[in-house]
Amino acid sequence: MPNDNRPLSPHLQVYRPQMTSVLSILHRITGVILSIASLILVYWLAALAAGPEAFARAEALLHGWIGIAILAPVTLALFYHLCAGIRHLVWDAGVALTIKGVYVTGWIALATTLLLTLIFWVIVI
Image (cartoon, rainbow, N blue to C red; front, side):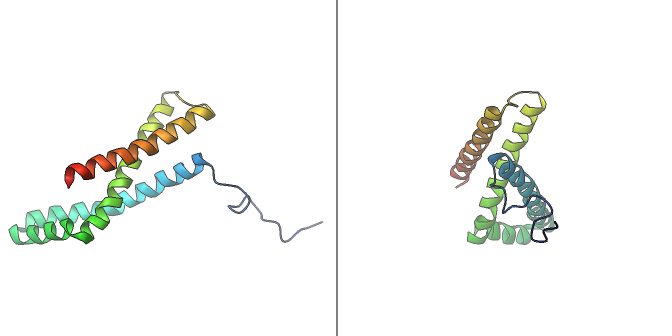
């Protein structure tokens, strides 16, 4: 009895997202964001090498509202990617591999991300 309406593989509509899958996807997304954001660093370094006028324009752009609107989420992505990477290193050492440990380290990574981002922006501003 073929059923043409049945999905061929598990689908997002069938399964509820779990913390482990969401954090894994976020780790990958933040890696992509950081790769793209590295172009901002390249722009800033090129402006630094181009001379005082170009550097002043780059600084004005990055310290303006548009620069902060871009750099704040990038900072959040940087700290999340760092914390998730440390979490993976802990797992590589064979620690916290139980279900409870996975969830505890996930919450620790999220809380540390928010704390580090907040501390960073309080110090910068």
